[in-house]
Image (cartoon, rainbow, N blue to C red; front, side):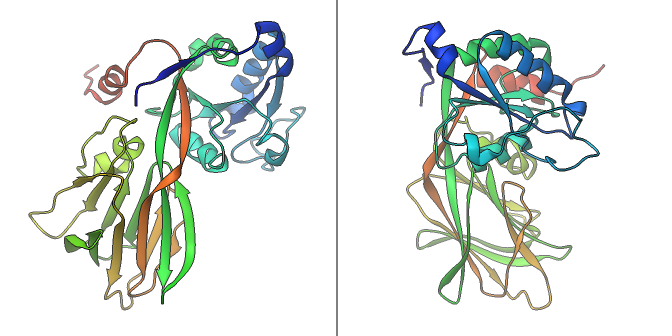
Length: 304
């Protein structure tokens, strides 16, 4: 899907008076919330209403500074017009999970290591005013619905932007995966990743999966350390249903984890089903820098 340039439907003055901008910092990345405070000052000086909703650690006094007014997610989740996420890709993933019932735009300010999903680096923070004014490109990202079936009943479900990972805990596990009714792989190994294009530059890539442009709509199914020399990733259309069964676990432990969250433990013969979600994530970008330029810079091997 081609990115679409969005412009305000009202004058700048009207937008500033009406728009609520929410800052979503990760206080474990933004020490003392110094960058968050700077962003709030920039937006407030520009005439915008600003709320601060930390993604992590809101009640952790070891990282939350005194004197910062915090707002509950429930108070802003449906009324905000822009979320500015200050942290790494993991922070953006967690914010997307909170917002999966909406398509409110998210702008990432990178305080992580790679920052594939972030549009801004801290030194360009002043550009958040462009985003607040509606001068950005919008990139709608595929999400996945994940269900865990046990004895014919759904006992766990989640929505993800990056991936669903089924993995063992130190032991090989036997897995079989189907695309609709067709078996596509069966092996013993460390696990399996069902990734979206957004997640293709993460764990999936580390497991040997391909990089897929983020606005595509595909499943990338990749084995993790399969004990099988012919194991390969599959790139599948979003119209399929991906089914994975954990077999012969016995005393081995295995989990399903969505977007890096704490895993839900599997029992023998459990089935994990992954489908294309009706929900999408709206990540926004500033400037003309392409995904390919960004990927080359972030992944190229550097010799300093």
